[in-house]
Amino acid sequence: MTTIALITHDIPDPAYVDHDLPFLVDALTAAGFAPRVVLWTDGDIDWSTFDLVIIRSPWDYPAQADAFLAWLDRVSALVPVLNDPDLIRWNIDKTYLRDIAAVSEVPLVPTTFCTTMTEVEAACAAVEAARLVIKPSVSAGSQNTGLFDTGDPASLALASHILDLGKTVMVQPAVDGVQERGEHALLYFNGRYSHAISKGPLLAVGGGLLNGVYSETIAAVGSSPDERAVGDALIAAIGTVLSRRGLSPHAALPLYARIDVVEDPAEGPQVLEAELFEPSLFIDSHPDAVAHFVDAVRERLLAAPRT
Picture 1 (cartoon, rainbow, N blue to C red):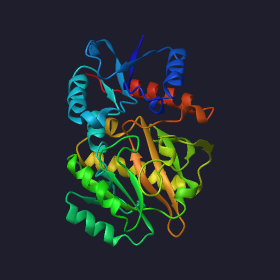
Picture 2: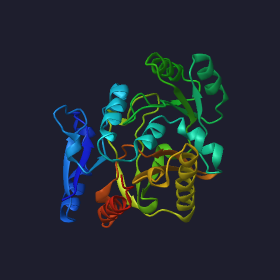
Picture 3: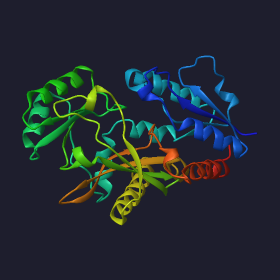
C-alpha cells in the first residue's frame, strides 16, 4: 500500500487549523492509499518509510525558514516530495513574481521589492492609489502584512520592522474595491482547473487584521472566463520559468497551485500571488474538489520518474 505523509505544523492557534487535512485523509484512504498527517518538525519520523511526502501546511516555517529548507533537503534525498523542492524554494520568496513578469504578459498586481528604507520610501511615494500594502516577500498567514492609506507613517514603520527581521519588503498599491469585495482564489491540480472560492478582506486599514484576528470568510464561487484565462496563463508561465531553471516537466508541474486574483476596475483580473507551497485548498468548498486532488496524486505516482 502506498504510504503518503501529509506535512503540517504545530501551531496551537485555532486560526491556523488546516481544515483540508481530514478530507484529504479520508479521500486518500478510500482510494487505497495510506495517508498520515505528520509534523515536519517531528524528529522521530523515519521519512524513508513513506512512498510520497506532500507538503500541505507547514505554516510555522517563516520563523525558521533555514531549518525548514534544511529539512526539505534531507527528506527529498530519501523520498519523493510534492510540490517539488526546487519549485518550493523558488515559490517560497515572492520575488518569483519578477520571474513570471519576465516570461509572460500575465497581469500582475504591480509590486516593488525593497531591501532598504530608501527604496521603501521611494516605492511608497510612487504609489498612485489611495491605499497601499506592505508585506514581507517571505511570509504565511498575512504575518507582518499591513494595509495603509498612502502617506501613513505607520506603513514605513512596518517596512522598517520587516527589514529588521532580515526580510525584503514588498510595496503594492491596494486595488480599488478589494477591501469590500475581497479576492478570488483559483485552485489547480496537476495544472488543471479544479474550483474557485472567494476570500473576504483580512486587513484593517492602518495595519493589522480586521477585528484583530486572522479569520478568513470563504465562499464557493464560479470563476469568470477572464479569471480562468489569467489563471491558465499563469500556470503556463510557471512551467516556462521552471523549465528555464532546469526543472524537468514532472518537477515543474505543481501537484497543487492556488492562484489569488483580484479584480481591478480598470484593468480586469490581476494576479496577487501564485501559492505553490503551502496554500489552503478549500477542499470542502466544492463537491468534486477532493476527488480532483486524489486523481492528481494518483497521476503523479504513476508518472513519477523511475530511479
